[in-house]
Image 1 (cartoon, rainbow, N blue to C red):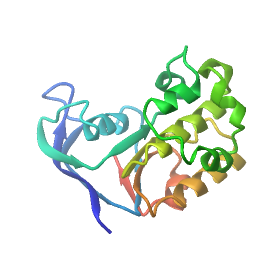
Image 2: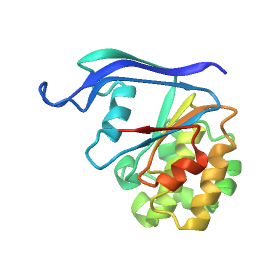
Image 3: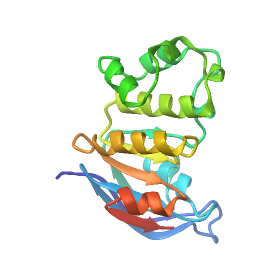
Image 4: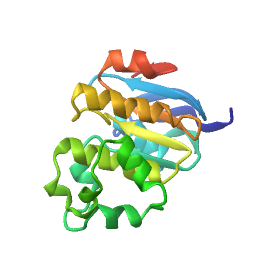
Length: 189
């Protein structure tokens, strides 16, 4: 398995005297899923911003292969006035879209809709669809199933886990049972 993420001796804080991370190191290989668990405000989403290069660490380094993210709030990750299909086509190939629609239990007709025309659960699955179609090496998942009922949550997590032959995943969750069920390692923040 090849290494696709190396976070080495990472230190970061929004104020220099109050660090969220001090000397944090994480590695991820293709085929692995690691869960990041911690209280609100512990820096879970901030860690993703550092991995994606949207924030700069005080010290340490991040080496990251191609990554895509599924955000906790799917409404903020889609433009409100463009159809889902147009937003997916902007960033990804639609070659496998029918397979993922089926795996995510989504009707093809939702692709012509605007984000506000979908339920939170549908939009969260559309966000996963878009991220998967980007064919990343690393999938960053921020509470990806929080808006889904238990049956759909299980189907989505099984689909994601069946994709581990193509990528590695970091999963932010407050659900410790979910983390124990799916993760190779749990990282407590």
